[in-house]
Length: 405
Ligand SMILES: Cc1cc2nc3c(=O)[nH]c(=O)nc-3n(C[C@H](O)[C@H](O)[C@H](O)COP(=O)(O)O)c2cc1C
Image 1 (tube, helix red, strand yellow):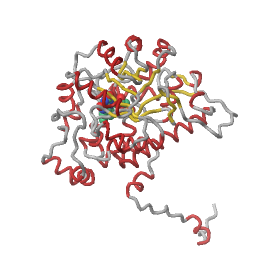
Image 2 (cartoon, helix red, strand yellow):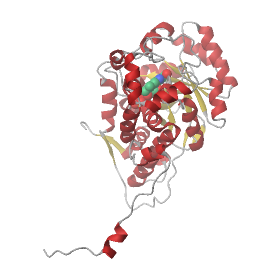
Image 3 (cartoon, protein in one colour):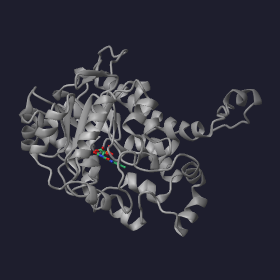
């Protein structure tokens, strides 16, 4: 092969330095192309115990890993030669149109991940037009979310505790603050064994120890944010201290039964979702008791390990419930195609938890926006490559679950 030296005039057009981005957060987020990339940034940016609290699951983390792996069994059946130049990502969820076919799941102690916390997550949900769910274990009050994002569609996740009067008070506050959906979580009679939290000595709020001071040198901006913003504490829960599982065990009521669902149905005027349903019979029972939707979920693998894979429950649950109630699903969603797969199998919509938390840890509100942007791009592209124009057109015949990966 004959070689020659390139001429400067040939090199000049190739020299295109990336434009300098002044904002350090945007600079960090710019190259994140997937939720896994956001996770990698989050891991670098946050103290180990904090990252592990969000990233980890119970015991051997089989529930979470299996739920994630189930999505790798998905095979789409594409059709070609369809005009997919315009696609509609919107979806009706519990009586209202959402701009995207997913909602943001409730996560406790969100301000520990980044002090921007729920306010930032709700603000992004407001901007893009999707529902945001505030957790009972949140670090922003029911009313604080309204102040931060007045236009966001608000859902409130309820844990019922031993003192039922407290639950009633929260329900009344949520109704008064314009939340349209109540989500009762029922997979938490006791706390799951989050081994990473035990090993890391995580307490809520995080204790200042020699170890945390050393960590402060490694993650100065996280500690600076923590110490220079309003104190990190539960917004509705007054009891705190110890590991998250200790707290769950102190306040949550292991004696919760169907009678409580009946009671709640009477007490709550809006839509009622039961979160943490893991078999078809329970789905039928709670819908008989008046639930408008079930959320098939194993709590992101943070409760029972070796739990059923929620994605695999979608089809039988949809068949059993018919059109009487909506079926939502979460756990293990890290890609827009995962959302479409769930919808193809019959789910009305999905919820995402860690996907947005990784964004939050990676870059506060901009990071959450990036996570939603990544998922949106993936949903759009996957729809186009499948050959359909809208999320509503995704059908059972577009999705197959391969037997093994
Ligand atoms: C850090 C963290 C905190 C959570 N806190 C709550 C909570 O307070 N209430 C609740 O019902 N679910 C909680 N969940 C579960 C989520 O709502 C959701 O079911 C789960 O994150 C979905 O799995 P994914 O993270 O793989 O998307 C939490 C999940 C995480 C990761």
